[in-house]
Image (cartoon, rainbow, N blue to C red; front, side, top):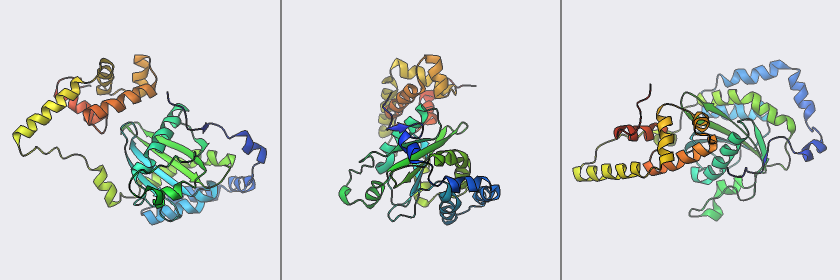
Amino acid sequence: MSTPLSIVGNIPSSIHQEGFRGVTRDRRLMHQPVGLLEIIHKSLAIQSHQELFRWMHGGVQELVPHDVLIAAWGDFVSGQILLDVVSPLPNLRTTEVSTELVLPFLADTFESWEETGCVPISFAVREGVFRFDGAGAATNPAANSLARMRWAIVHGIKDKRGDLECLYVFLKDAPVLEPFEVNWVKLLLPFVDVAFRRVSHLPMQRLASMPSTGTMPENQEVAETQATGRLQKLEDLSSREQEIMHWVSLGKTNPEIGHILCISPITVRNHLYRIFRKLDAMNRAQAVFQLRQRGLADEGN
């Protein structure tokens, strides 16, 4: 099990000692349910990125002050994720923040969120956590802007039907966090999730999410070589990995597989990460498909 990212499951005592600055605003809204209902109602009418931006930096911003919201969805085990970034700061747009820049942070944060029972978590953002090693790293505008963030509130939603996860990371350039903000994230996240789902993909996201066409190579010799390579990769799976894929092919979730094999769901996820790499698969469905083609996985019910 990996070490959590300086996770603070509950609010640090240092924040409690400073008091609930802004709690008056929080209580005022709690006694005015019409204001909260208006925020919720507006989330159901969003149809564009501009409307999403205005909503996030209207009522949501009042309840959960933040400088950046990173929405990530996909398969965090294989690293195949897509991003949406909402921020009023320059250089922090969906089209300007590369997956490579935030993926290490998001992968570790997702694991910590799972380890704490999939409840909202808050933590101080470590210095240097947003790394960019490509050309022009020292002057990467998005990396420089994210480097100023000090606190994060994280919560997510698991899609039990689609086998994907959605993670939402609220980042703020502030030395402390108000205790009530975590509770507001827990309450508002279903509506934040709905709002994002009402906005269509950007062109770059459509291309990234397009499934493989599965077209046959022009040269039959190349096709046979690729088939041999895939077979070799299947044979490279360890007995434990084959055992895990057996249960994956039957539709078992990571917690269910962990219970069956007496290992943690995190260990199952780590095995799947290695399996996907060996098979060049992006997700469970592709891995199972490859195994079934070779008669190495059950068809399920």
